[in-house]
Image (cartoon, rainbow, N blue to C red):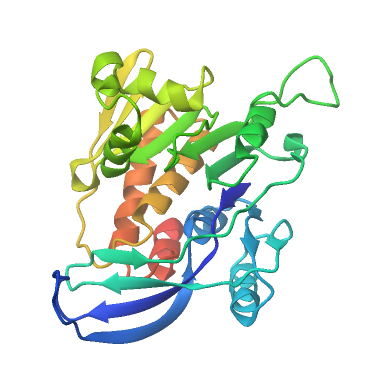
Length: 296
């Protein structure tokens, strides 16, 4: 189960890098499926998982297009909420070096209903600031197996570090170096991560259930912090075409590895490979290159 955004991306290819006060020419490449729900979800679908998406969209033509595209590609959209909101297009400004700048309006509030029966799921991935998400995560971590009554089912809970200073219970928390820096600066005590270390800092967000805190740093690779120490996994070298969705693909690879009972380092290596394919592909969601890689 993925609690994440489903977006309609409008891609504008710029002829030069962005400069303050500059005038920029662009080519409109049209709209495409995007958002963490599609980027992470389709990578997992193509890898053989059954993925349901929890998000909200409107009742307009753009929302109809999103649902059709996502469903045709294999995402289960039966848990999506359709509300009386306008489904906007997100503007992706792409520069010749593959970097992108995202321009989007403020998202309307998204409130989750009562938590579902998590015994139906092997894992839940959280990449949303929806109201009620902390309770959903807590319920998933405490999920009992109803049939036996004597044991607990292990539901994997993976989450992205939230933009705001909110709680997000999980076993695995993921963020980028830049997002972590922004999170630290927004806290009351910016020096706390240096005082207590990355793992203890992450526990202030994820709670005592946290097992690993993964911090990615682009071409410099990623580090997983835990109670026992830290493990570093290098990035996979590749030609950068479009960085959109790289972090989402990385998360999908980590989830795929952990559900296959791999070690954290092995799962991070899967994530690094999937992210490398993502940045070498001119799209947001995984495409033919990713499917060909899985086939090999």
